[in-house]
Image (cartoon, rainbow, N blue to C red; front, side, top):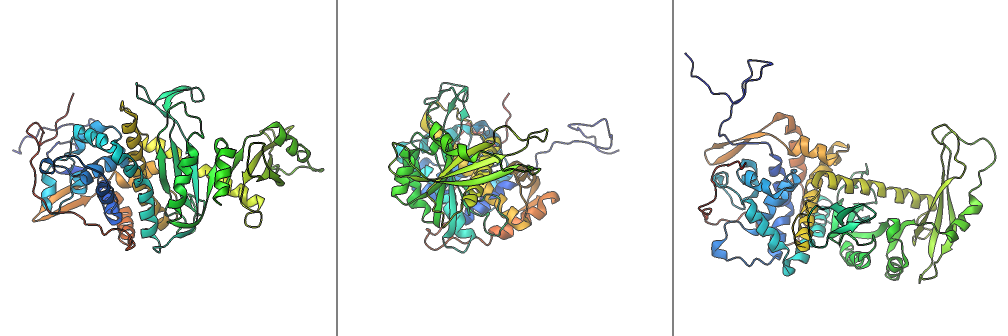
Length: 497
């Protein structure tokens, strides 16, 4: 007789199917290895950790800052936004291989940091001497990716999109406040994102690479859209010139004010944005709102009209004003009584960008808003700490995770000339199942065949990344003796009710 089995689950739809639970090295998050390979090639977390002040006693450190940063960042990139998930991922073999800053096969035997340790990491990052250095990691990630994935020189042209967005909270977090516009208690952070050639979804080779968030700043929930945005943008000007020769800011209507445009014009920084209508602007538009004679085309009209220079009373500089008229038919095929129109303001001269070009360039901003929505959907940060600075660094951590996973997504798009939203990329490529076998002194990952083609493409492209010699040489994994976990730590996975 065969040996009796104790099955975990026997489906009734097919009695030949049996589900068994065994203590084998199996993971559903094999993508942590891809994230580590990309991170290693860029030397990102290693560099970030080297810039931070660590007050812990060196002789009592089991987890280095590099390892703690990796564990938290990779977890967020794979969809684990709650810190409590760290207790389970500490025993995941893919995470153990990807996170430990050591060589050899012993990495599979040692658990990673627990949730309380990860909480202490956030407290450490929130200290005054570390906050700005950690926040600079956003630009550092983009800079390293742009210069290592391309010809190791500055790109020709790029665009910076700046916007604010709400992060709803449900506690007594400091700095959070009720915002009447959003009708909720929120934080209202500022973020800036960069894209090569002004397009996030360009098909031309090389134009996709380098897109991502380069700066972020957490603000109180009752902050107005443009509050603190001028120093935020000015701080980016000098840094962005390190990775591109020419760039401009693309702004929403809330940022198109004299307080922002005049200093940018003084610094010879190009920008364009939509300006809110007012009676004076409406009077300028009125002569152009009549329809041309004759039968209208099926799709309606769209016109771009140069209105010359425009200057409000409290502005130092006049700016180029463009009227856009969109006279589209409604659902019954009839034209509206009054054409829809809006205004764009820019300091780009007509000799370099026509009105139609400005309109096309501005409309690319919609893809940035899609990226922002994608970030909220995939990595929506849980800003649940009682201290605003801890929530600030938690937001930056989520944006760093977005950048790292998006670099791989962009490489796959460039290789296959397609488009992948980040949810699909995470679920189909990064959330890869596999079994880890210890064979001699090797750790063999037996990967699910469904993702092998994607992984082959990505690993080949990541292997071609080369950091310029101007960046510090990365050290890679360092030999050091193992420090045992504390007595209260569980060596095996324990589920808490």
